[in-house]
Length: 419
Image (cartoon, rainbow, N blue to C red; front, side, top):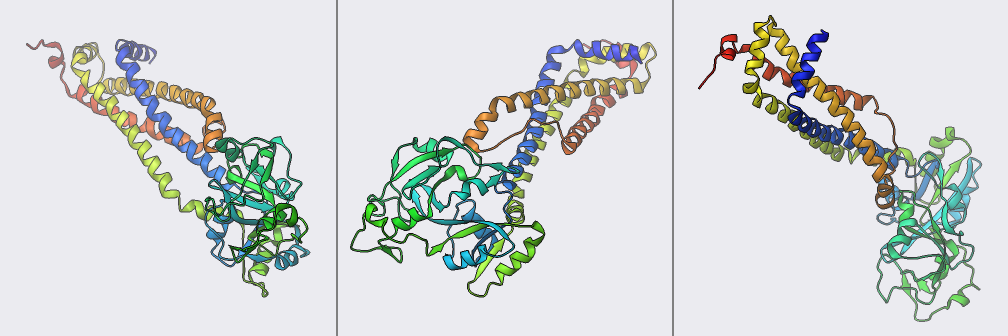
């Protein structure tokens, strides 16, 4: 057996240029297959951990996905607001440990503005319990102060101390801007890979001050200055939604039903994790398309490997005939091709994993900074090993084609010279 392995190695090394090209082609294909699967899983984990350790999100009566989209992802708008009295009533329930109000509706140069309280920065958790942190400055303490998400500050070029003007609604035209009430940037958050990066956070009182001279979304003929607005009662009359943390997660379903059946106002309470899972299921078709593409790239590379083996058969006919003449059995020919293929596949796998982890280490900061995708360097999981084993099995199966052709050729055909 040792002699056979040595023979197979020497036979493969005699075609080292072709061998290296084949290994490289397969390595790129395997790296793509494993890489797509890894990115898919990391993206799913990041998506599922956009919001963690929050038991319920409560908003006006609407569909669960709509509530999740506008309250967490800042996509779309609420069907209605929630009265402040309802918020305080539910927040005082004996099962509620904490609650954080959210007020949406304004924007700044395409980025959503969210009014909230300072408690938001300590209660919002992402990626299995990570807390928000500042990369510079401090959290807001005055009604005309703002804390920017990392992407907002980077894309718009803002720094601590800059003054910004918010706009009424999602438009950003001159006649909707609150130019008389500018906000000062007091802090910039570290990147999180969540919608927080694309949000401008202000106090609830600041949102109320902006709209003190508005009625039903329309500006009144008179204007109230920023200084004069401070003298008004700036406690919100209504909010868009609020996050809830319960004293025990065992009470989550009971509290959800209790809020959904709230008689004073039509409300919807959702469990973020369950709703995120439902939303991700709508994106599974894209995952499957990526995996199918990667699979066909691998199959193409395997076909290329078989083509290479077939193209060298004529050059190896004398080699096969000599082996048969010295007593090699037909199955030895098959084993020779199978062993060479296994050698190529194993080497391609090693190179593919090395290339994958090398690229992850190089592009990890870039993916986090520009796409909010956090990729961990971990060993291949069971499903990835199964894909690798499947690729190896298919490669060995494909190697039987040139092996079978070589087996069928006779000894005399290999020893005779053809002109």
